[in-house]
Length: 204
Image (tube, rainbow, N blue to C red; front, side):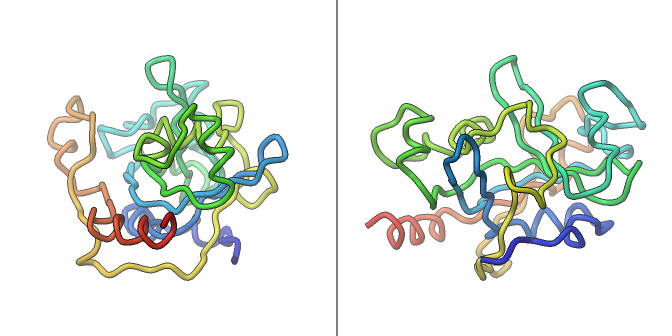
């Protein structure tokens, strides 16, 4: 279980990083509970030139200021006043690239994840969405700016890798306001047949 180094996040190609995050593990140690899930869906946001990005045209607000930090930190924002959405800031300072983690497969301390989600059994309801995964892993907006090399939130490479034909690529969800940029192939998701196979292996 190798913690991912900061060099991974500091690269310039946010779309490539987003693709390579599929199969990595998002781990939290919050309230003394170590929980984790394997990332199965991501979306890339290409900073100032991306109309779907919070930082389009170098927009800066109190909320998105963390996006302008050095890659390897978290950007967590509130959506619809309810959902805490977890993003990974990438690239160098002043280049506001980020990857939204949209879904994970629960792995470690599933009991805690179930309790946080008020669920009784493992279903897609636990963490197959950007808001639900944050709740399952205990991530909130107060964790925005948290270093991903620290002791609260980090990512691990556990040797899981997937071929291109095992990953679907398409447009991002819920960004129709971005016009032509909404059609960009910036969303990556492990195909359902692959996910189901892993579910069978892990939860049998």
